[in-house]
Image 1 (cartoon, rainbow, N blue to C red):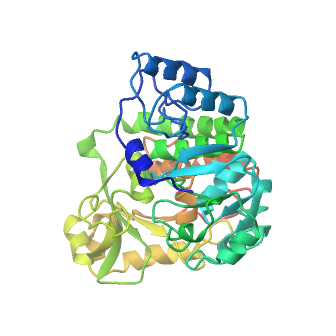
Image 2: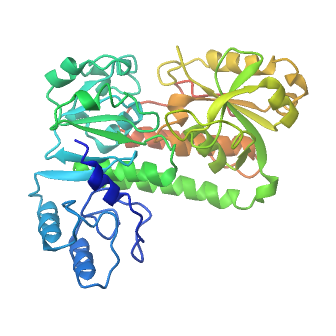
Image 3: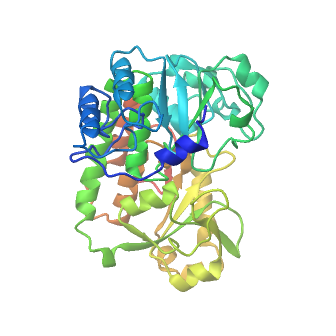
Length: 423
């Protein structure tokens, strides 16, 4: 249930963080000191606010009544003692969502959140899934067997409610399913949480999504395992990339698969694919040259192939998605190779540095645009700067991720995640 406009307005006011605040914030109201857990330190922080010693933070008003007082301390105590009957969260889209406890019955529209559920070991909590899960048995061994509630494009509200869910996980970045088709038609006791588990809004938001879901489901130990894996890999890559001066970073053109020869679908700022290429040390030639999509802050749109030719990128990265591209479910990369050949054959592209130097790289969306993105960043960094990342093994990083999800799947023997392969 999304709380009223007045409460949202209050909570969207920007306040200063307390000194020493964690870079990963548990997005639950009552987390007054803005770290990754609600504990006695939050009570101490509230007491400091009441005494005029601490600054108000945007999660300090635990009961959302517009005041910071003893009632907030009482509610925080009930959360700490696991006596609270509900939690109020802020999701990745900024929505204020009240969720009844305990959360025992989850419906998934969100593939990437499905991977988080596996990381947390909460598959048993899933009671229903969007119809696209059923064809992904390797990626979602247990979740794919759950009852289907149909398409997200036209949500079947009757099917959803028949499963008596406590929580529905949906997309934040492009509002799927549309709130007017899902959220607006549900009773108040069914919560819809829209989370960024893809990296559209950056690494901290993904980590916050994992931390928040882990806390909500009582799976903090598994959350810590993911964060350790994530930070180890992203920090190592960032340290090496810092050695490359910004004005010397590789210029890339990033596009999404299509069949047009006169125009290409370019991807710019605000999209997860852009984020991971930048984390890998690239400089996107289309970062600021695209109009915004109508429903969010993603820069994504058509450019003429002539526009790409004029800017002569050093690398072209293609994001492969669509019919037949389920990288965990197939073992041949022929579709990805065909996509690279399509780019190579575009009119005039033989003269582009990326084509002339055989630097067309294809990544499958379901491999890269997910909580697994540290693996994709490692792969892209190795492609972009082979001398700097010669010892990095993206397959080993990916295998660790599969182990985190508890899935028996050898990524070196199965799947078609990118093209060309690594020598």
